[in-house]
Image 1 (cartoon, rainbow, N blue to C red):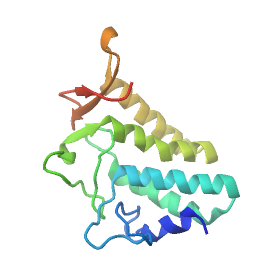
Image 2 (cartoon, rainbow, N blue to C red):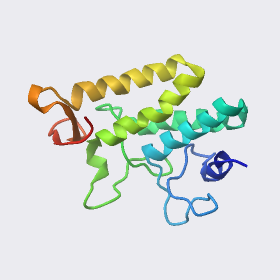
Image 3 (cartoon, rainbow, N blue to C red):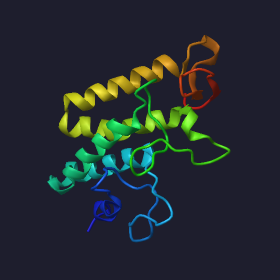
Image 4 (cartoon, one colour):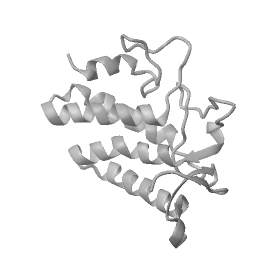
Length: 171
């Protein structure tokens, strides 16, 4: 057994993607059907690394279906960039009244989305993933990088439409 066998218990074959919250056995918890971008990317990365180390293709269908879920639902088609929280059908949801995830872009999530994409690029070097990697990188540089010479670094948050850049996060 490996950690991949644990995580695939939380995979949703009907709708695609991995549930974010799981119990100690790896099964989705009954009270939450969330699928955030972070958990999708982390699952893709982990399963791809297992494939890279072992050559076992068992996890490739999970990876491909999760990548498609990410591209279909995790990407903001109106303004570009990655959402934070989705429900099991891929619909944008609000998860916390103090952190309204449906109305913001968060640099942490933009960076984290690249984790799974980069693992697929490294292992399979597919044109589609290379394009998504470059697209994500470009939008971060254009919309979240603070270009002021004395303030360089990424803003932590912007509004969904990339306005109202605020706070500092990654450097």
